[in-house]
Length: 315
Image 1 (cartoon, helix red, strand yellow):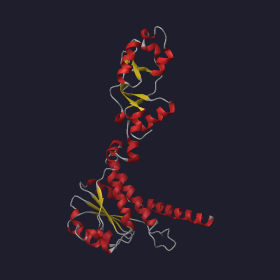
Image 2 (cartoon, rainbow, N blue to C red):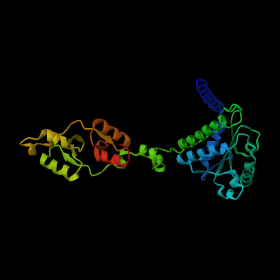
Image 3 (cartoon, rainbow, N blue to C red):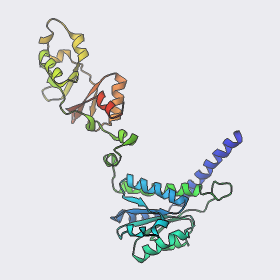
Image 4 (tube, one colour):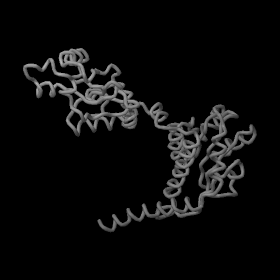
């Protein structure tokens, strides 16, 4: 058992060595590739045969999800009519370890004939793919993790890393931000993580003045149905919060004639509009409260309730 575990670890080490070799061999070809891909207005069409093709599908998905339109084109399908999916506005990003994969040749010939730029990722700088490309990112020659040096393992890991480099360099160039991410990832766990308080909050927050009498405070609290009100000063800044619990703790014969400032909690928990909703949920859970008032430029602009977070699947 221990021998098998050590072997498993050695495979990871082999792949780490491949990534380190890829890192150390990177030159200005990666920058030229990013320049070319950034300038084009169409799609980045990723292609590859066999295992590089599977890696290409993932690279294409990463590009598309980070703001760069992309799709995968299978080289065999391309030779049977799908070359029509390629326009002069597009760039081909082609992956092939040998660079001489026969199924790629019709696509490369078509691209060269119609002036469609190619970015190559290959380990053979004198290959057909390399010579057909506008930019060639040459991978270092390194053994596969496979004990027979046959199954694509280390090399496909290196290709995947190159794809991530290209996608994230383009993301940075395009200043693709969290809001852009949220637009492209509305579903799933990632979409939930990117929700902000402003996406879930209610703008009709219950608000009273510090000098309002408690009979007015109770009317506002009852009308808005959040079980709390925020208390503001003359500059409309929040100075406190009154909850149902504060009502019970302060009840007395002249309670209705007391001012809000006499009953309020002076250290309320607040959140900004741009706070992630997941963080707001964490605050409410940690402090065992059900609502948070939302501020923008130090002024109240809304309220978020734990039920809003539950409906969004965050609590």
